Length: 188
Length: 77
Image (cartoon, rainbow over all chains, first blue to last red):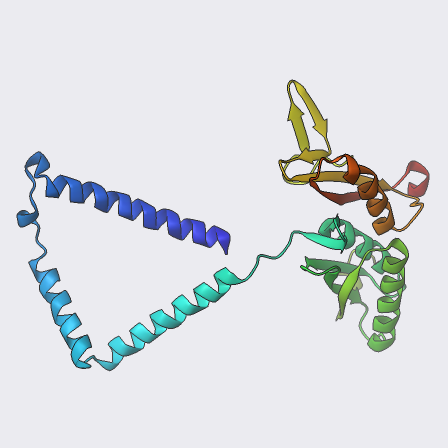
């Protein structure tokens, strides 16, 4: 969100700068240009007409819908801006952190040691509270008992992380049936 | 000591550079790499470092960041 905001604000400020330069040039009649020569009479009359219709409550349905959508978009943007950004590192305790890559590597290593798991991919998200949210996707052969593997994998990962002291607040395990010829490991 | 993943974790003082420690006006960050076999759980190691460093941090908020886990030579076999 902050990158998007920076881009928007850079464009807004660039636009304001250009408008400011034009305003000074036209206000002080510099370089042979004056405000009276600006072709804005159509624009100003159109704007005046629009404001009059707003005051009279005589707007077209499309215009009302557009204005409501703009208001909703602004509200969503405002709420998104108020939300604190996601932390980059996983909090362990008071003033102690571990990088997400450490948690990812540990989980990936232990998951691939579990029989029946042919490969894995791990996504770790840090949270403001201690502990990480982990999404673990493990690839297994077709026709295996998925529930047994899932339960065993979950227990093994939790035990290993607990032993190392790496805090996980939520562990989502997803099993994907895959062709062993296309996985990292063919045989366990 | 850790060196940072995307931005170098270091402090420059004069012509000297201290890697793994980032000293700010109000914050102090220590980046470490833990090595297997771990004598204690990772949070305990980080907390013990923080407890040792915090009294000498001049009132700065002290943070310990575990950047990596290193596997020893014998562990690779």
